[in-house]
Length: 121
Image (tube, rainbow, N blue to C red; front, side, top):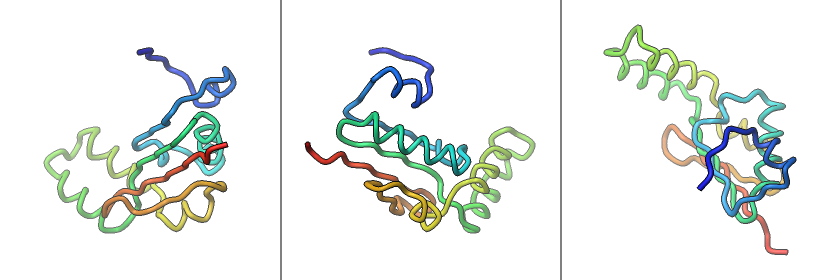
C-alpha cells in the first residue's frame, strides 16, 4: 500500500489508474469549475467505478445539525459542519451539471451518492 498527497489531476497526468475511486465529503469544498474537473479526473482514473459521497444541502439538515451540535458551540466542529451544509449541493443541482456517464441519487436523508461506472471496452 502506498500513501501519497496528490491531486486527482496529478495522478491522471502520471498515467495512474485504479479499479475504484472513492471520496467522502469532498464535493462541497469544490467550486463549480473544480467540481467538473474532479469528476472528469475521477472518470479518467477509474478502471471500473468511481463513487463520491457527500452532504446534501437542506433546511432540515442545517437545523438538525445546528441543534444537535449546540453542546459544541464555539468549537471548530459546529462551525465547520454548518459551513459544509451551506456549501453542499442539492441532488437537482448536481444532476444538472454531471458529465455524461455519471448519476446522482439520494443516499440517505442528508447525503447523496455520485456514481460513474466504466463500460467494458
